[in-house]
Image (cartoon, rainbow, N blue to C red; front, side):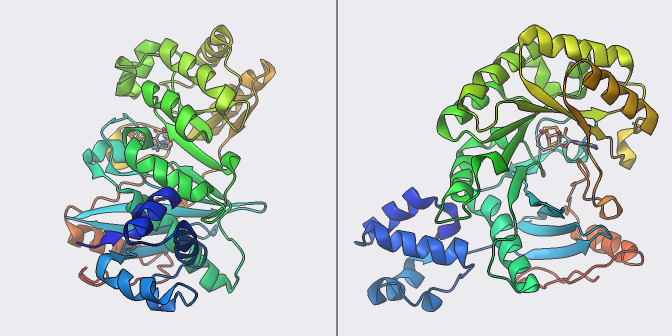
Length: 381
Ligand code: SAH
Ligand code: SF4
């Protein structure tokens, strides 16, 4: 089996080239062709040394992920469903805004944490994505969007690891992927514009601070252990006290001087003013500089939960802001295509079911383009 060059950060690629008897600057050239120009075919990499160009096809490949489907929302959000084999698919979501364009990237097929309110969690864990599979989402989206927008300029300005999966439970694959995102020869994103979101894998937060400090978002969802144990089962292993300490320890290395706490607003569960006051007390007690992002719950049928009423979310935000904690309410994007937070179920155990689902939705959705990847069954729009 040849090596997939999407699996390497620049150091890894340099080591690979060295093993082939080539110097580091060749790896830089190759890396730039792949990530900056989106080229996968070695024969198109015209300034590579000829002997390397001719050797590469027998030892390496640049392999992205087949696109099973694409859906575009009326608000400009685009969701891609990528085939990762064995009936699994993962999703990436492109969210354009006035001053930035964010790609929400998946790190695992499914998720083992099993949060009560998350459709990925309900689906269970299938497997970790490789570095190449994490990067393939960005590689495809960036270059596909450049083609469509007919630009050579960078399109995606921010990456959030908020798709399917718990990124810090796939640490070994995550780190090289982050490095490629940050690398000036890769996507050149600043550390502030790459965010890892975690449900609170405490030991790995500390390692992230050492290995690759990027912006950190922590999914809190509850101000006390009893409630958080129920909503985010990982809390039983790493309770709030430890999580808060890990947040504080993270900050000196971080590119931002605050942690973003995400808080999914669930009707009658965690959304009262008593909860808001407890949340204020929690962050004060631990002295964690933070901003809070309230996410209106995006319902899915099996959850049995309801979104908090708008007024309750507003009152909760006002209470936190009044206490001096900067709090925002996340706009939900891509609602009409189930691309909103926590709706990235992407289950294709039975692919025909997804095909039917997409077909059914096709009536009110713009399924812009559906590619037929080699080896994958056709997905009818
Ligand atoms: N596993 C990581 C990152 C992926 S989830 C984490 O949990 O942080 C990204 C964000 O979406 C998290 O804050 C998560 O709690 C939130 N989320 C999950 N399901 C949701 C839902 N149904 N409605 C709103 N937000 C949800
Ligand atoms: Fe996993 Fe995050 Fe969903 Fe929890 S919210 S189940 S950690 S993807």
